[in-house]
Length: 255
Image (cartoon, rainbow, N blue to C red):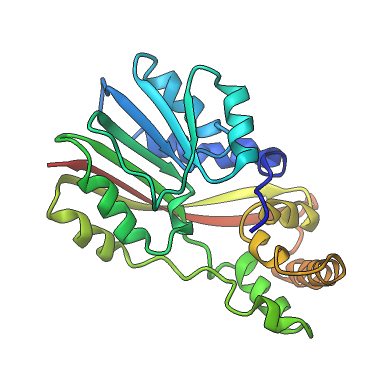
């Protein structure tokens, strides 16, 4: 897969950082020794962690060189490493593991969260937020647009699987945690127009599709996708579009 773009991602930095702040507010750890931001991206979420816990050792991991470059420029005092969440292991002092909009990209988010939390020290906290939006028009229409094209075989099976039910996350954590907090929040983002919605998903859900296509194919695919968005997200009275974005949150403390 081609590298992620920090500049593309940060076009909507405020909207993308808000769920991280909401997740952070539910962590009960007051004086962690070390804090790890798993899938730190360009460091916008890591910055929240450094502000809350200025005396903790802060580290971020990500698979994207461009995201890590932006994160290091943003937070030169933090430590950043290029490694996947599936290959990374917590250290013995990682009292807080934080993952904002990253673990849904792993092959098995339930198993990944359990493995990470199980490796934490006693009283360690894990806090995870994942988009739960594969059934939203923004994502369903990617599949419809892809299936309608002669190059459909190139992008078949690209869509992410839906998240497991909340009960699956609870069951995975219940034997190793003494505190489990699960919830959904649906955010409603004001978009200037349909093109803004395309730009929003271009750095996330749309990217795996575009990575598999030639430049001409990608242009045709995006044009078709955009036309479908026009109908799914009608203009409001002021001309803007409202993008509904459901997210699932998990916070647990290691027993």
